[in-house]
Image (tube, rainbow over all chains, first blue to last red; front, side, top):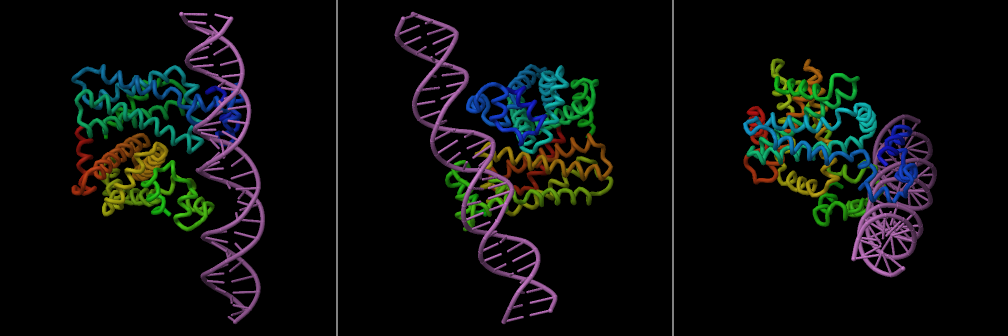
Length: 173
Length: 173
DNA sequence: CGTTCGATGTCAGTCACTGACATCCCTCGG
DNA sequence: CCGAGGGATGTCAGTGACTGACATCGAACG
């Protein structure tokens, strides 16, 4: 259904597409659509749980002596690896999300969830509550900025390179 | 109407309160409610534009030789000053927002708007696009964490102190 | 073969939000 | 004091997101 939804959103826009339209193109009922996705926006955010889990694992797997910010960045690098080989899809999706405030809002919620997962993993490494929250926010900000740059320009550079490059700018602050 | 809405949300929760309920308690029509607020959630986010403007001005007024992150922090400090003398109201509002995912989502959008305004002001000071975005995100993260700590514990310390305290943790990263 | 369970379809209902139109009231020039 | 204009509000009807209750259907299993 995600495919059907993205096509329709790209054709006529998010608001001009009803949940029924998406369902119909996917060959199911509107009711079924809402059994798969809690709401109409969620259809564009299917992989977010996976990204959170991936980031968490990478943070816990980071060397024990790594600084909090470094561990957090390792997390978002791992999360980024999930997108790395789908530049076209990511760019297409990014354009759709940027075009609608409601979708941007949802994207922010997912990024906040990624930050929460990151902070949680950092705390499991013994990092202070406040430091964990700030390191997580910083790493996710790097991720967000790096992805935006990655999708709005042709590859290369790879997403991984964009993230490390953006992280360097952060450290320079 | 904000008062009526906050009372109702606190009594029965956000979802259990219809737009009509709020309007009725405020002595107007549902239609009038939607003329004042673009949607039901917005009723809790009235001052956000003012905060953005205040932060922008403070950043532009910061000493020309201040580092980007310092200027950005001056911005969120100024924004925080708008809340400083309303601890009870802020705490009450915070509890309501935290209790509902939709409201959290909207809060994130407002914080993102604050970050955008901050980044924009930084760019006007000659800061690079990427550096501005990262400094803005960092400052807003500090703001967010500081406010959360401020409202979930009794005053003092003041919000200003919480912000500078949180900023110190960030620098230590 | 009958049962059971998960996924799907059907239907009716609530509520957020919007456009079109009428009304009311306040202000200001005459 | 009067009438015109404009801004805020009320009324009404409609669309679409989402939900709960119930029926159906097909694969898996003993």
